View 1: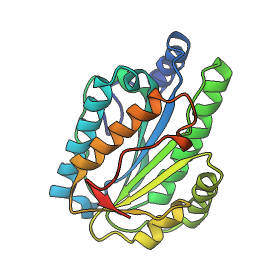
View 2: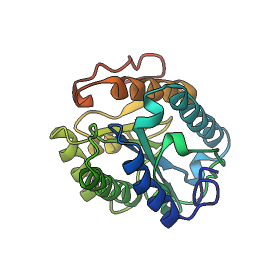
View 3: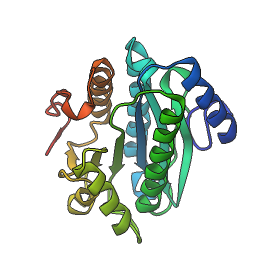
View 4: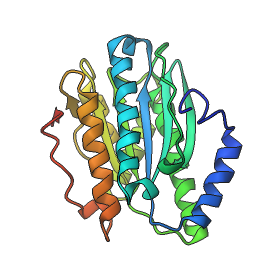
Length: 233
């Protein structure tokens, strides 16, 4: 089970312990990916349904790649009424299934992003402590609006890390999103999703993870697939 607390009813503490053990058992270079998802009330209906389908596709596609399935570590955060880490970092290979997300409440995107950035730093420390090499971390934000209060400081933090090439920060705006605000979370402009092409987005995302996993250098220099199939800059 993926979502709204954990995978397969595991506790967060248990997941963290198993993830640490996995770093020892599987020393493959890692690419940590933090998904920050807008699950506010405005995402109800078709948007949240399409988002759920896209996430499921992403997991399945990454698992099909012989390198990426062992390299990609995923954590998921939601901003829907409250900011929550619904899954701490876990290898995609360990994901057994997916329970759909629900949409409700406001959009505490700043708080969810702060949690994600803090956990990315902790994850990198775990890699260093266990001697596991890692690629440049990814922060992927998906929202159909604008954050609630208290997001400016964390936006500057994410943008600075992106400018320093310490983070791939990819804010994605669904129809109606405030792209000017979302762009402040990265050193590059936010990307507008064409309609509800979540399937195409997550296909691109999984292909990107495959290329990063096959690379021998930081993903800052990896030629990623074109975004033309799902969005525009």
